[in-house]
Each structure stands twice: as structure tokens, then as C-alpha cells.
Length: 137
View 1 (cartoon, one colour):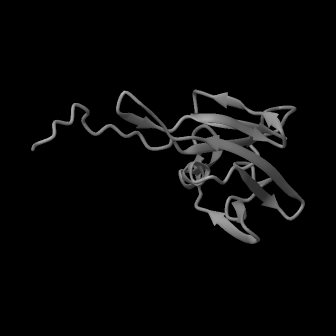
View 2: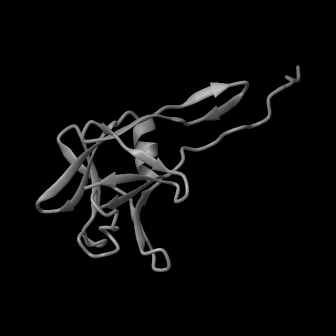
């Protein structure tokens, strides 16, 4: 007997997460200006007691003088069940990220919405012009 699948394949992977870091007083980009060095920034989490790094890249835009920490991996890790992450900026500054990305299937389509995103237990504004969250320091 041949089965008829009325649903085609429909899958949207989790969206990558971008984070810009700006001065809370004058909005100066703290990655671009060198306050935080792109090659030192890390995001990590703990699997049991094992520290694991999340794959990230740092995107620099010289025209707009901005820097963004970007990761697709962090959203996948959240879907897998890891929700608490750490944003290491330098030896004096590590922030706590809570990211809840879930897998939802509706009308045969699976997508992965962000249900919650906080840094240091605070809601972070989303900059739709740059497609990233803006952490003010």
C-alpha cells in the first residue's frame, strides 16, 4: 500500500544569535573600539561539569564602526536542552546568557522560535537594523 504524505518537508532551522556590545552612556561599540578584543571573546556552557565552547564568529563592519558576536551553534545547543551560557569578554568581565530556543511543529512545519533571551537576568533590546541583540555596558 502506498501512503500519501499530504505534508511536504518544511523545516526552518534556528536563527543565529548576534550580540553587539555598546557603551550605555554614548552607544560607542565596545568591540569595534577595542575595549573587548574580538579574538578573546568566547561563549561557553557546561555539559555536566565539562566546559564546552560554542562556535562563534565576530563580524566587524568598518563602515558603521560596529562589531557583532554571532553564533548559530548557541541556538542549536539551546534546542538540545542547554539554556545557560556564559559570554566571556575578558578576565574581568563574563556575562550570563539565558537562551530558550524550542522546536515547534505546526501544520507539518517545524520551526525554532526564541522564547526567551536575557543577559544577566535582564531583557536585552533587539536591534532590527543590525539583526542582533544590543548589550549595553
